Length: 90
Image (cartoon, rainbow, N blue to C red):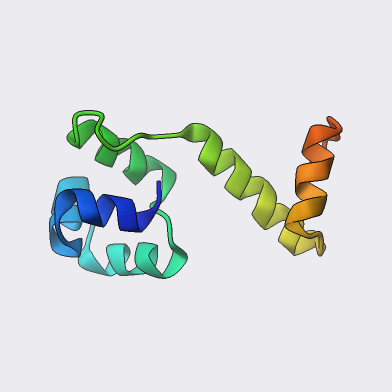
């Protein structure tokens, strides 16, 4: 879940932190990263009554992209490897 979407839905970073039960400092980290952590995204989706969507696949893609970056691959390589059915796990 993208941080901007959640902030827009709840109305402010403060309201997002209260809705998800985290500190404002944590929300500031989400803003910097551009996304909400997986567990908090599930909470935000539940609190929003499903108006914000929790997508577990988003976090799987993010995990693969970060792993690829650590290995020096580009996003194009990651996408190609996924489409070819390659298992990039170590």
